[in-house]
Image 1 (cartoon, helix red, strand yellow):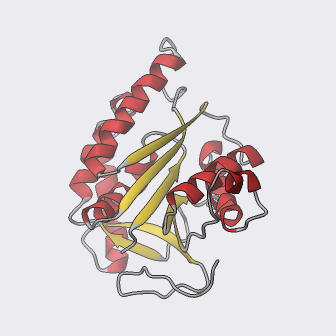
Image 2: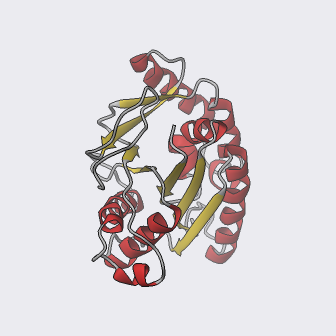
Amino acid sequence: MPDRAMVVCAHPDDMEYYCGGTVLALTRNGCEVHAVIATDGNRGSLNPDVSPEALARLRREEARKSAQILGVGAITFLGISDGEVVPDLTLRSRLARLYREHTPALLLTFDPWKRYELHPDHRAVGTAALDARLAARLPLYFPEHLRDGLGTWSIREILLFNTDQPDHFFDVSETFEGKIAALAVHRSQWSEIQIDVESALAREARQTGARAGYALAEAFKRILIPGVTVSSYGWGMEGDPR
């Protein structure tokens, strides 16, 4: 089990929706999880009369309360407006700095190669998060970080959520209720949507679990960086400095 993990997502409710059960399982097993949320979700409403500023404040508060349920120790809000996330050098540098500061062994983020993903923020965040992983491990990328006293850092394992090519399944049979409780805090989102989100997620978790022999599961595309020694839990590292 990793000692530190980072979740890089696009919107304040993405972590809960896509990997909340996994995050809760990690924190219950002593893993320190840091969440990075690219946008404030300031345009994520069907109400044309709500102000983006008020919505952003509300969604940040919802994210903080939800993170407490999942045991997430810290959140970094990047403050980008909804729909304006771009995987450019500025975002890459911001994420690489966070990796170097917090030294996660495990990164969870969007699969940027998912076919027919319609949300530009999802695609952009996944791309930027993976590009920053490479930059964080090499000293000639963003050397200003090193001048600020940071070292290079190599993330050893990546779990991509919202993927259409899953090959790793995480048992959330004991944490699914916590996932739903955390997601329910995001009332600004789910109170407007006329679908039974809990039933839909439970059905998906059962179908995913059936593929892996679990009652309920979340699915990921897993990437292991060369040099990793895989333990019975799926984590461990030695050797190669990448």
